Length: 133
Image (cartoon, rainbow, N blue to C red; front, side, top):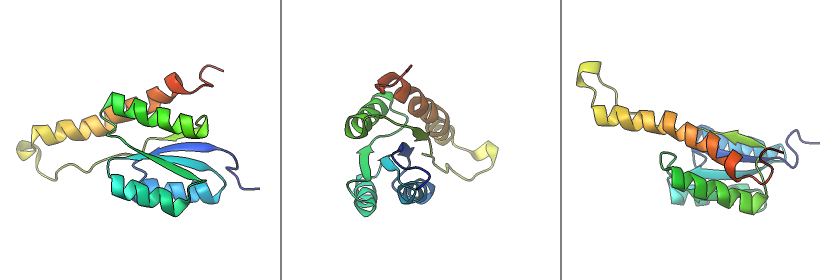
């Protein structure tokens, strides 16, 4: 039996890179995945490649708490719960010396990596029908 048979995973940044590779692996091990990201075209293609029985997707910027809440709710509506949450969304930011680093770029990078991770990890516990069970 596959190691993740009948498990459901929420994966942010799931439309490409590490997130999509993780989704492929999870599906190959029997899981269903809910992909969340900002590129609707890539999300749709990723979910289609993984198969409609195995994957669903939602567009959401992880820095937007309401968007994350909506994406998580869509995944719970589709699959009933999440067993695994992978907060993978991230951006590179700029490459520059500190003295020349644009503060708005630094703020956006922090928002995606820190605030985004908080939104992603905090939201499922408030939406999942098994929260607190």
